[in-house]
Length: 449
Ligand code: DLL
Image (cartoon, rainbow, N blue to C red; front, side):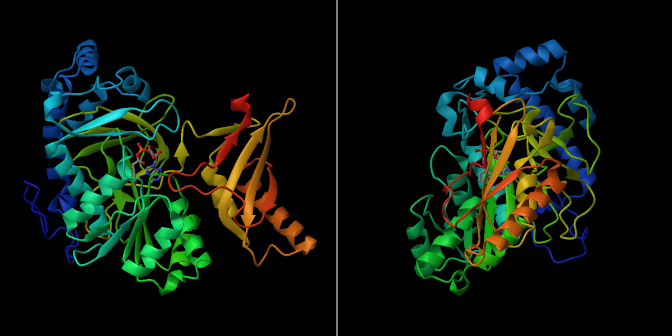
């Protein structure tokens, strides 16, 4: 196991077998908070090398010396995606370019991409963070892991790759795409673990079946999925279709990439790696803190990043935080699964709806497959939403009455979960587009006009 953390640890705090990769994951809270405070001062100092932060801190009248308690984080300015865009391409770099060891980029699905940079030490930290959540989700040195994330500017492929190597397991860098080849690799190289987006895991399961490979006959036992929102029902589908235990992991390139948080085998939320990040949950309108267990926008501050320290980054991701102790013995705050993004939120006939609420409703009804697309039009004065959803082949018979009943159940389930009546269109299997990366669940024609 890594001894990467410099802090001493109360090994008896959980009274259980230690199953963490790094002792820092189970540090007593008081000690963790002391470490965070010390590191937060370091971040303020490092960030002062960036003109944007120098100016912001000067305006706020705050220096590292003013940070006397963790609550003083509220004296620091927020950073938004727009701020990062204004600094495009490398205005947020806090080290000389000669010391940059790697560049990545945000996926840019909602606008112009942004670049992020890592020092050699940042890369070591990142590998350690990914190793932690992989280990928490069953990865051991003797295992083989199939990585079906894109390798490139996207942080998914390389981030997970080096985390797997840090654990000492073998990596198959399959990368995203060519799904038939993914199925053959799973059959012939027999990895125990699959790593990709949750939607791609479902596509891989589907293609395995088409290729005559029963996913349950594979050696696969674990899946680590992230990069996009997914519901509990989607998890159950993936687990059933691939015969594995599925773990959620979360991250964003601006903060480091995957490795910001991940689930342990309790599946009671994702442990935020608090010795490297401070997480806050705020009301996206007032920016005031939100109490534990209630949903708000997550805000992250990096504590150890050298190349691009980030202060109070507004992620736009909506989730809730949980501070009660986890049965696994880790002492870190957990975040619930992300229910959506503030910029993903649809307003349909005045009602706020997240795509994940539609997904949750669909997958509660027997017969619906986890492939769907929400389309919104405004033909006249009123919005009209249609949900196209694929139906399992055994249900898609020509018995019109059954199909009508299924459609009615789906429409009722969606209305009950969102408060909005949406028209459901049933589609035969494989008619909606599959992606190897992050899936697109919404086509808002109102925005396209
Ligand atoms: O998606 C980093 C990543 C790669 C995380 C692989 C996990 C696995 P970006 O491309 O910058 O980075 O996109 C970040 O993706 O703000 C969330 O909206 C969303 N996201 C990432 N993980 C999850 C998750 C990577 N587990 C954005 N659940 C974030 C829900 C997620 N949303």
